[in-house]
Amino acid sequence: MSPVTDKIADALYLSGCLKFGSFKIKSGAVSPYYIDLARVLAAPKQLDIIAEVAAEKIRQIAASEHIDKLASIELKGALIAPSIAIKLAMPCVIVRKEEKAYGVTGRTAGADIVKGDSVLFFDDVISEGLSKIEGIKPLVSLDASVKHMLVVVNREHGGKEKLESLGYQIHALAKITDIVTSLVKHEHITQEQATSVLDYVKNFKTTST
Image (cartoon, rainbow, N blue to C red):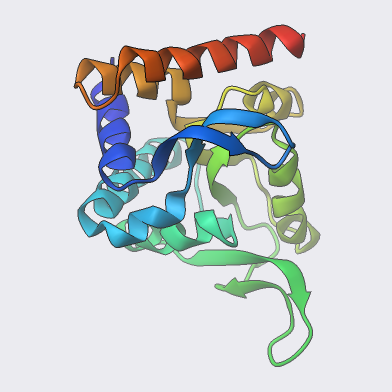
């Protein structure tokens, strides 16, 4: 298990972001776990750890391909993106889910998008990937180039592979199967809890192929 996975697993667990039980997710399916990244706002130390790991990953990406701005979408990803941007000294853009009809209107807030900007899109998790396509549309409409997407957790529901088949480069700080394996190793959760997640991912992959 990589040190990065251990850091992310511990941060999600200790902050209360990762919960185990029975949760109805956006697709309507029932999941044995749920990731509520907003909870990390109550745990500054864990927030800083996640932000630093994400910032280091972006530094690695930027070493081979210039990145002008960091973008995210409300709500979950947008809560953490500014903390990452501060560590990178990089302008940050937040995409609104709906266009603002008063004051400074439009679908984006924060830094302005300039034609030709290379923008890295950040979010909390990736499941099937459809929300990421919707999230970057306002950026693309402003003539930004979005090649890289970074998430904290890959839920292993095929979204990474789907978006990569469309030409995007998808990066995840950790996979959920590796996270629960790490948590068992450090005695944070039981093997039974981990197995419920591992079986859930395995069954999802089986039924979706």
